[in-house]
Every structure is written in C-alpha cells, then in structure tokens.
Length: 263
Image 1 (spheres, rainbow, N blue to C red):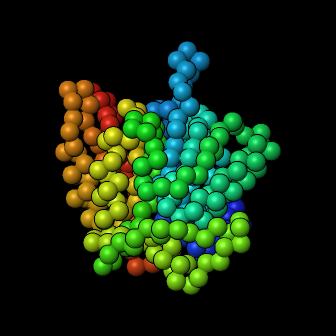
Image 2: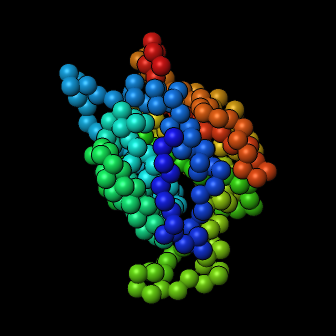
C-alpha cells in the first residue's frame, strides 16, 4: 500500500478535511486495474518517448489527493508527471503546495521519481488553464444538494501577513467545498461542460459523484457528446463503487476519449 501524504500542517478551520471521498480517490487511482489502464495510456518507452503527463486537480483542499498522485506517479502512471492545483480558496492553495512539496521530499529521500508539483493557482475550475493541455484531471466536487451554491469570496485574509479569519468567513470557505446546489450538480455541471475543451487528446478526467447526483444519467449524457469518425466519448464508474460517506454512496467516474476501434 502506498503511503498517504501527511496533512498535519493543515488548518481545517478554512479547508476541507480529507474524508471518505478523498480516500476513495487514493484507493481507486492506485488500484491494480486502474494503474494498468493509466500506464497503458501514459507510460512511454525509450523507442517512443512522450512528454510527461500534466495533471491538474480542481479544488484540492488539503492537497492530499494531488500530493499522493504526484509523489507516487511512477507507480500509478508508469512515468513522472507535472502537476498543479487550482482552488478558489487561497488557504487551500497554500496548504496544497506544502502537502505536495512535503510528499515529494519524502518520496525523493526513498529514491522516488522526478515528478514536479508546479504551483497552486487561485481560480475558478479550469479558468487558469489553457485549452487542450490537461492530460489527467481530478475533481472531488462540492456534491451535496443545497438550496444554492455559495458565492466566491471577493477577498480572503492572508494568514502569512497575520490576517484573521472570522467564524463567518471560515463557514463560508468550508461551504464552498461541499455545497453543490440543485441535485448537488451545479458546480459539477459547469466542469463537465469544460472537459471537452480542457483535456488533451489523450486526456482523462476523474470526477466523484454521490448517488443523489444521478451518475448513471450523467454517464449516459457524456456518451452523447460530439464525436468524430475516429473517436467517441466514454464514461465509466471505476474502482470501488458504493463506498459510503456518512449518508451518501460515492463513486468515481472516468471520462475519456476512445478511438472507435479501441478503449
């Protein structure tokens, strides 16, 4: 079993604490079936070298998922990767950078690979990213059905300069990590609409759903996205489906383009 990155430095007053949904990503993407699939897609040989895959996690929170994937990239993807986190919460951006850099330092001490965590960017979903550049997209969205989706904070206190976070500000930042609006799908639907533009041709997205998000309907819709004569869109549940997070059952859906004659 691959070690889980430490998040002991993270303050959970303003950042989502790793829970069942976070660990479902770790278990799923490091499973033998999924690493076999990923390595067939991204591992390069000396005869046909390929650029290092670029991985982006949207809403990384504590950074435990992206740190895990970056530190153990050779085991999971069969190659080193470049990674980057994007979050609307500046505190999460800072925490993710520390989590990833600490995990990479520990991995390098044990003779690990040469993967690099590039940066943490403050932004809304894929807005800081260029079209067609993401090879691996990871999104653990706010999936809880709520009356509305919280607005993004106009300004956020800078803890590095001694800024204080009030109880109201803390509650608002935390709500960004779980409040998904109607059917828990308002933020996820925005991301799904961006996937065809943001993924590279070899790109794959992993998105978490709860049963209340109606994942079967979502997968059926994705399979109707625009295709060409050479490829079509695929969406399948991977890993351990039905894992519970409190009252909900969770599943991770893999979304990718496949050539008509292969998976």
